[in-house]
Structure formats: structure tokens, C-alpha cells
Image (cartoon, rainbow, N blue to C red; front, top):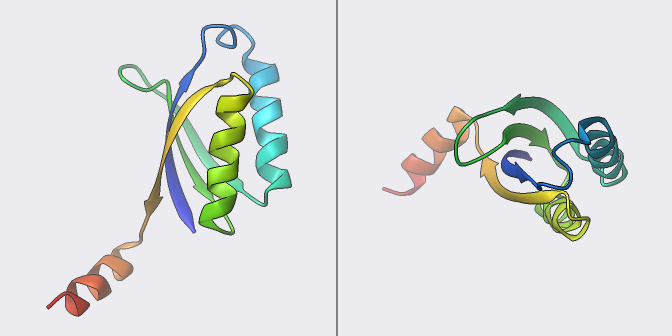
Length: 93
């Protein structure tokens, strides 16, 4: 299941990039989540990631863990391929 993560980095962790990303990657791996891409942005969010998670609950656990560790906050959104969207529109008729 694909997800888009919109995240912020806490002030305390902004200067500890290598440590923060190592912790996050290790936890993601433990939960069976594969981080496919990472982009750093300017504006409302500090980063946008695309991840593949085995379940929505795994992604929820990762998001809660990230906040509990004080690393920052993130908003997670399920991401659907175009084929799924087309199929859903046909069912919605």
C-alpha cells in the first residue's frame, strides 16, 4: 500500500539529519515499510516522502512513533495508482 508522507522536522532534530534519518529508516524497516523516495521542500512541510507499507496500521505506527520520538510531525495519505482511481469511478456510477 502506497503512502505520501508530508512531514515537519522538529527544531531539536533539524541539525541532526544523519541521526534522525537513521532512526526513521530503522523503524520503517522494522515495520516492513519501504521508503521509496524522499524530497526536502520549502513551505508548510519540510519533506515529502513516498513509502510502501504492508498495512495502513504499519504506517500509523510509524507516524505515531515519529511524533513520540520528538522528531517532528507527519501527515500520511494513502496514494492510489491511476488504475484504482478509474476502477473506483466506474463503481461510483
